[in-house]
Length: 85
Image (cartoon, rainbow, N blue to C red):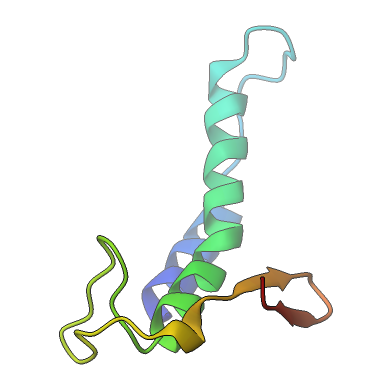
């Protein structure tokens, strides 16, 4: 998580030089990276919380699949809600 925080800090110092809206690939890449850095902590937290292996997401410390992890997690900036489908 520390590496993500460091990347978020570095990104906070970055801006977009090209100020036009149309065909601004620099702006598109900036927004994509901002979105990735926003969701990265959530992805890492959930991967660490899942104490099982499932599909291509293999954990050496939890090699077996477990049915109690057949859940979906919905996140908001204010709360976490867990739903089982």
